[in-house]
Image (cartoon, rainbow, N blue to C red):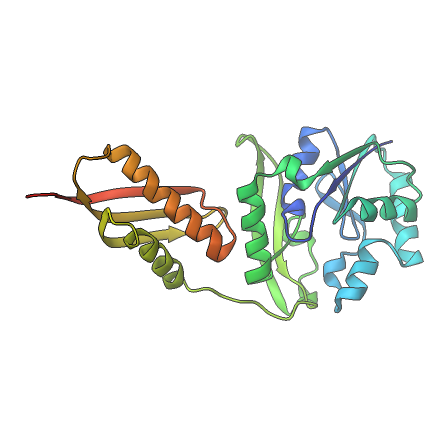
Length: 270
């Protein structure tokens, strides 16, 4: 059996990327947070996200409990598996999982930065830190819904290269989390407005639209001072860069798109 490992810090989107990564490498079976997932369905194990404390969640994820490890080992022996993907927060963790399950040496290691962009990772970290959302790479109906205090929502269908449906995720908020922080959309809009209006070229920021779901998309409507000293294109690029820098500084996430709509040019001397 060929063993792959995908590792990265908690909240960087490993579980979200697991289905696409596995499909692209011809992997049918995933071990993630204590679960053995085969062909998109739970085959054995118990999710660490079902635990009530962080410590027991970590123990569950590394198969610390003998009965849990034996259950997954037996399921692995009963399945015809050519390739297996282990997911963990570090190389040390995935090696520990391989040892606990007596899988042998891991053949291929991939960091989450190898499979996700900086923008995707920062957005995933924001979602984890602000909203305490966790992803299980299983369909909604496969997850034990009566376990969580803050129950789940259906995640999203995962398509490979936007064409072939290869799986589905579920979003949950585990019991071992303390709660969440919510940042109102108006805060985002105020920061963006101040970023724009701090530039001499901007006379007024008349409107800001922002959508933060998968990746943040920003649209600003501006009235500009215009003297034709600099080409308008380079002026707009400078505005976009200023918004990007301030958004990253305040929220530690990178906007995916920044669309600037010029509503009016206040031409110098007119």
